[in-house]
Image 1 (tube, rainbow, N blue to C red):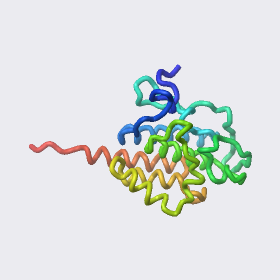
Image 2 (image 1 turned 90 degrees about the vertical axis):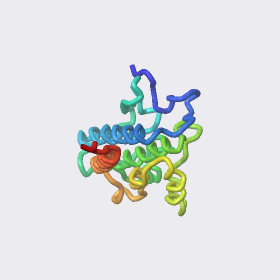
Image 3 (image 1 turned 90 degrees about the horizontal axis):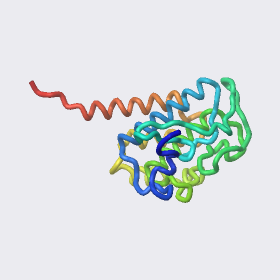
Image 4 (image 1 turned 120 degrees about the vertical axis):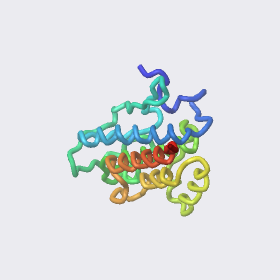
Length: 196
């Protein structure tokens, strides 16, 4: 039992009424990447990362990945081809019926972070990132939209998880390391040494 239920229903009527504050968003991103890294190093890909499959604990600080109905065990270097998942969060290689591996989960995590940044967590507001990402001005528009609330490092990280070619997209271990580096930098900037 998880008090607040899925991330998708944290606000009334299941619609995100506001973006998530930076500190909480970075923490959520770290937990999602950590969960994926745990799965991937144990030979499992989730294949259905989305707001309704991420549970929020009663403290609103702790997340848990859930619903492993579409998950699959794979060995290192193996690929799968089954076109399965939730349309809005499917990686390009999944969407087109190509072969894919655990990096498809990283794309979905990037879509989820985007949804939290832009207050599009509810299903009715979700965008099909595979289509949106193809816009030539996607990156510049996203930076313009988010730069007043989120750091350039966080925006750049999200964009890296949404790289179309899997070979250029970070894996979950690299993604986790990047988020942890952002957290350390943020903590360092908030720390002001006390004058003697």
